[in-house]
Length: 527
Image (cartoon, rainbow, N blue to C red; front, top):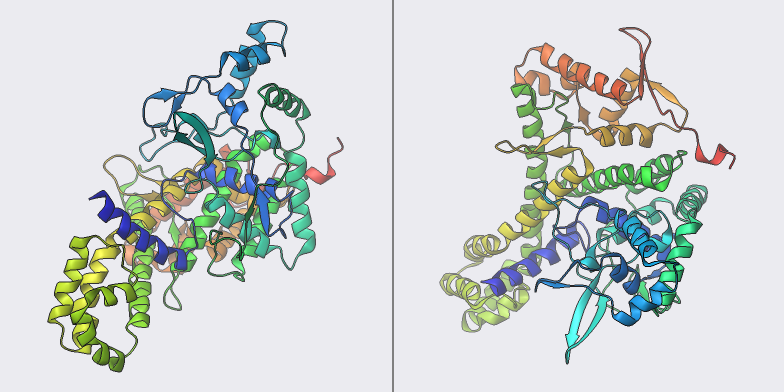
């Protein structure tokens, strides 16, 4: 059964990569997208024009920090050797100081949660630390055992997938704006280079554990290379949305706050941007749009909660329909004409594996191949191939396609703080405090302000956010819902209160309120 599932998943992954890009998979958490992106950027020496990047292992450092933690699925734990411990003791006057250092680093571990709000189950070599300094950036590893000897290599299947794609999005988004590119590069280099004390400690620990310092030779491609088949891939490189992403990201990181405070905001922004990108790529027909109706009343008002859940479901339907449409296109490209089918149908009946190979399904299980074989043996015309065979192949692959892609969309919403569910209810859109702050800071330069109603209209025009009466009427959701206008007014009032509570709205009167970014611009702060 596992092999069957894997082969179908492989096929579905290939199709989804052509829609959204290589390396979007479920299971990845919001903070990991950010960490991957920062790792990749650091590995290019903060250069968006780079075509490859290097990776850092920091194996010894992580073994020291997470000693005693789980290692893999066989109940093992990571331990330093006595020789390694004795080497570390030379760094301090007494052993207790070493425990203090370890506790400091362990407290920097980034908490990862699964869909139910429980801690994600990660082995020590898959854990990450808040990037207070670039020396705390490293790539996920995996264990290898041969002749009872244990070694570690990079985990390509998990780490550096969404992060690589986000790097490419900002790279393409700043291609025609050198000043914007330079601002982002320099600001992140500044943020990740400030805490020199951490760098010194990390350097001493790594040296004493005889850890080989990376000399930038371990390079991996960011763009297509003749030397390797494995590289991140974006189906579209000239989408104007990438420039929007870069501008929003630049505004966010150029507030005068440190990387620790920024991290949650960066997670919200990047996951939201990736969610927007996926929905944008899911649009099939001109005029379709992905709108977000936000429940700002904390699921306390049934009709508003239902409208928000419906909005979420409609956006998921865009994903499903894109699968259906793209699969149909792919099938028709492979079975491209009536003449082709008519001339090859006898051959396919005699040798079904040839057809299975043409469809790209050679790694399907024997049971699934037999289904295709059975159907093709009964097809006697082009029409039957395009209906009966199409339906069977679609059933084989579409469930996995939908399942995994929808999981990604839900994970992005949940980890970004712009959606989720309560037990017994459907997924819906809402705004966490972090997401609310992120949206303000991504659209208002530090130290600037905007009229509240103008801000709501901006969110509607740019993102399709529907919250209050004006946007609900403009969108048509007000008329379709048959709800009293007071529901939408209450929803908007609740958002206004959340903004005020977060210190990003100033009320001058019932009729006049201003959204503001209270932070100073980082570049104007004198150190």
